Amino acid sequence: MSEYKVYVDFPGRILIVGFGSIGQGVLPLILRHIGITPDRITILTADDAGREEAQKFGVRLIKETLTRENYRRVLTPLLGRGDFLLNVSVDVSSVALIKFCWERGAMYLDTCIEPWAGGYTDPTVPAARRTNYALREEALALRAGNARAPTAVITHGANPGLVSHFVKQALLNIAADVGVDAGNPRTRADWGDLARRLGIKTIHIAERDTQVSSVPKEPNEFVNTWSIDGFVGEGSQPSEIGWGTHERNFPRDGKRHDFGCMAAIYLMQPGAATRVRTWTPLAGHFHGFCITHNESISIADYFTVRDGAQVVYRPTVHYAYHPCDAAVLSLHEFVGRNYILQDRKRLLMDDIVKGVDELGVLLAGHKKNAYWYGSQLSIEEARRLVPYNNATSLQVTVACLSGMIWAIENPNCGIVEPDEMDFRRNLEICTPYLGNVVGAYTDWTPLHDRERLFPEDIDKSDPWQFKNVRVIW
Image (cartoon, rainbow, N blue to C red; front, side, top):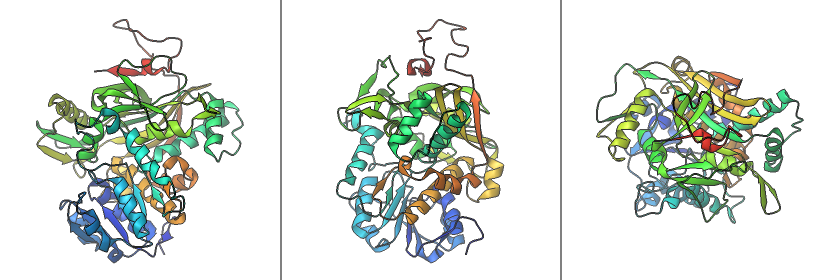
């Protein structure tokens, strides 16, 4: 029995696909909180990164790249009934792995919905089909006839994932502070009604990473505190926004989809070239990148309120990400190279000397203007809590852990999104690893200190219009 409060026995095997920063960071958490011996864990990875850690923990590591042609042959001996596949890879189709897991009777979790290699950037594929919206619709389509299939949790890292649980806790906190009876919301209709009654117009997933390395970024090098290939992939996709019912101005380069839930729009430019204004308690106001993430779509969809077929309420939702300064420089260089990745990549880990990853949700438009709720995790605290992690990776890896535990406790739910899970159970597991978990109100709006230098075409009647939030490069 583990000495830790949260501990679940698991009689099956665990297969970890991908062993970059997230795979390496989640392994000690799995061994700490899930009752499984190292000999029942296998790592399948495309390179030798992390081999020393795997050997230290006594976990088998297989070096082989999964492809459309070989994944069935490679996975068949490694996965069976009652097992669990944790997918923290890139360039491996999530939909293909979910289907295979169900054929084998195994559970599944990923941190984002991935296509096969090239799926994000293939210029022959229309932009609408390179969006997370399209990937999500493809994954959700698997639900038909599979309601009691082994649980497959999609997009459950820090964001997407943990932030969906932050949103629900933030709504309850705001309701208590403004005197609105929240009741005991359980269904998506209950939560949508609460958000509507509170007057929530927009939800920013607002993140500022201030971690600093002792080794400066060099030219022709991409530096980041988490997966470089993952960041480059999503930064190259069209920018996406869950589109709210309060919006009166449609972006000039905005496009609507002609299929699916219709909860989001996309821009005809990549997220790596789109900035938005936002706010966090430690950083104050700043410009973040409007990088596409699944939560921008799933949260907007989950909180939609309908009167029959008519949508009467939906918040605008988007990610606003300011990565560490070295990653910002890397992104500038990457965009300047016309989205061709630099020749060298470097993940920041042991060389980080200071900094915090401040990740949370900013809910705005209610009686108290805006409320941020989330995690302020320092590099010092992350290192004290779990080895093989930095502040950014730990926020992701502990959410992987909580999603796995929830799936083990709820093993036959088919496809599940974070918004549909028990937010209290997930926060109970994650909170001890999140540093300071903070709720803070602010009177800041995207109109703060605007037009000081130059006049702008802004909508002063509603500061939370996306037109006011957005900044275009």
